[in-house]
Length: 355
Length: 253
Image (cartoon, rainbow over all chains, first blue to last red; front, side):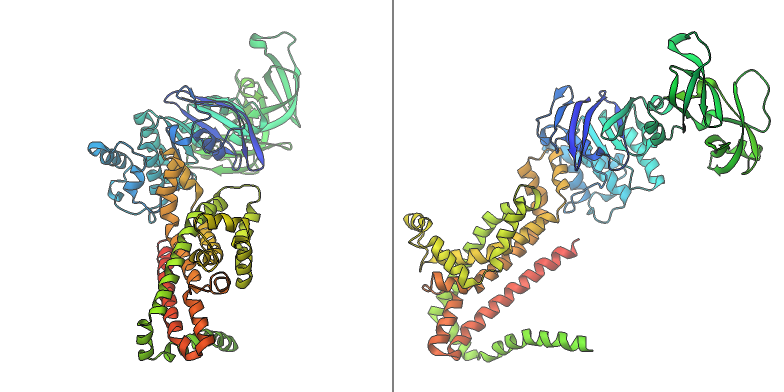
């Protein structure tokens, strides 16, 4: 278990403050934030390399705020790997293994090397290794002494996309197998979606939002989180009440206006708000379909179509308001979506997330 | 073309006198020099005192170098500058300063005399002069060596269960060690070649450089040459050792 309570640390010229995160035993947590937001320093504070200015760090249920790094039993993998250049791959992996009796050390090195595909490299020096190989050696070295906590600093930042996919799978498998509570910092939300049980978004030195990755992505609590995670288009506007009476959960039907765009929404309050429109919730069609469902329907002009392997992003313009819709590539071809054309867009009132 | 000419001129200026000195010594006079007990004792004394000064500068200088390279403390730049200062102080001036600080009249000198470390005209005076001029070389070499090792390597070692001292011994020292040793050898060579401060602190017993000066003033050039040649050969050996240490270190990276 990793628990940070109101932690404050100094990072160069600024501070991280009121950092509260909890990763349950055996869980996988992610701290996501822009480059230079102090993520590495946060990990170093958990490992005991950087003093806390305030707050407490609990590992395995014990307050370790004043424990030196060597007694915290934490595995640490830096973004730059930082392998020991004077040691072989095998000796790097075995560096932290204290139990040298009866070939335990060798057995553990072999086991990890096997799992990570490093067995043929054990006798080699570390200088000639590729980025992916160095990454795996660093991971094996951190896990070798069987820590119950693993801290990962941008583990996939410096490897190519193909290696990244393989590493993610290996990491997930290792995490399950070793049962190690993991906290990873990243700027890539993809990591959070694929790996994390818990995600915390760091903004301006504080945790802007924390929770399950799906939930944080789907219901961002601030325009920053929405934009940083790429949840959707963020529009600034006003909500007016449509129905006088409150519905369940204190919500009511309202009308959201932003520029020329007017949408029916389910709101909690009136006044100035941000609306987040997820690309996948915007339904585009050639002709306004008849039928009950979506209340919101408007015409948009296609600015640009960006075709990916599976999903196409359709950049739209609604009389000066920019929106993005996502459709499958197949749909994009079927509808023959092209720049300059007019298209009908529909969105459910419940799909508009208001902040 | 002018570029090559100017460069060649300086190379010639450095290499010429050294080559001339080596040629000057006849095998007969060198043989005699090797059998000269005073010269032999003096070179032995020089080497021993230089070794003592080097050990002292490592013992005191390596911790200082580590602090200067790794730990930001108030006044760090001032201390770093202070340690380098002896490089620009004329050596007789250093000798005078040391004499005032460590001599019989000074408080420090009296304490030293009481524990049997009298400086003036004694071996400790030789070591003091050598330490003063060679410590900056050792400290700055060690500081640069520690600086070239990523401090996060020690952090990784700490999370892998090493105490601060173990992490230093298992990671930083092996990585910086070669450059520290190269610095120590350079410092040793600097100690062997020291004259200006030693001649003021301890004329007798004579270190090699003082002996050469002594023979030159008393008996003339030809009397000084054999001793000078031997000292030059010693310097060349040290030079080669340092080059080997450094080239090997860079080849590994």
